[in-house]
Amino acid sequence: MVRSLKEMVEKARQSGKKRLAVAAANELEVLRAVEEARKENLIDGILIGDSLEIERTCKKEGFNPDDYLIMENSDPKEAALECCRMIRKDDADFMMKGAIKTGDFMRAILDKEDGLTTVGLLSHVAVFEIPGFNRLLFITDAAINIAPTLSEKVKIIENAVSIARNIGYHNPKVACLAAVEVVNPDKMPDTVDSAALSIMAARGQIKKCVIDGPLALDVAISENAAQTKGLNSEAAGKADILVTPEIVCANVLYKSLTYLAGAKPAAIVTGTIAPVVLTSRADDHSTKFLSIAMGAAGVKKNN
Image 1 (tube, one colour):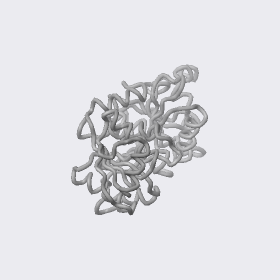
Image 2 (image 1 turned 45 degrees about the vertical axis):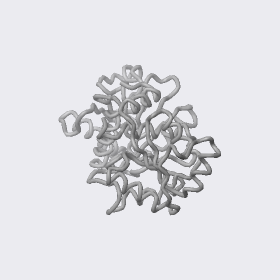
Image 3 (image 1 turned 90 degrees about the vertical axis):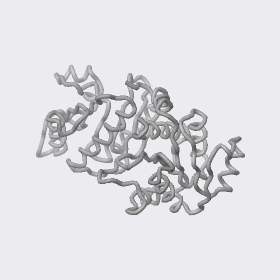
């Protein structure tokens, strides 16, 4: 099992070099991350955008533009659609957001003709390396699904489990988070969903993972807390994946770990026909690089 982001990068390297298409690649931190990923032999880069600006930035940073396939397309929306087309034509393995608004980028992903959607559900999966914590921790969904239904939570879990398995988790342990460990249908309807998901996994409706819930955060990640509260299951205290009831909880947890705990994150959008690296403008090149590694490890056809 992979226990650090460094091991995740190594896992991505061992799975073979992938072709990364970057939409509107004329963005400094993105280019720094792509260059690091190229030097680590994780990717071959396809940079789509304002070619003159891309080349100027590369030269200013000491990168060799000849190390990349640079394609001219100064319209960010069209650049994103071209990334999708390249993946559909098997000319690229996954894609990344550059200097383009998130809404425009996602519209390309969701485009009915050229996009990357399937019959499944798109969701955001993040993985954290937390100081003092003994393993990686996956969190979903902090960016895409606002208030998922029970059936949507099934898809969110399946997407996260697929990514975790690609990274090296054979049978990941999933905790469905809540404020308490008891089912309270009147005051806390999310606890009903959590219990249902746990039963569905036990009966084989959700496969290739172990699920428990409802679980409070402490019981999900701390074996001592689980033992103190008398909860004994395969997932309690040992969770690899935390599934939150809605986007606010996930987003607050994501940013709390990043800004208050000094955790290092990586994140991708999945449920598409290929991984999508969707990072924030506030993320530094290290987070963007780690997200590229996560995406490279998540390319299914080469795993």
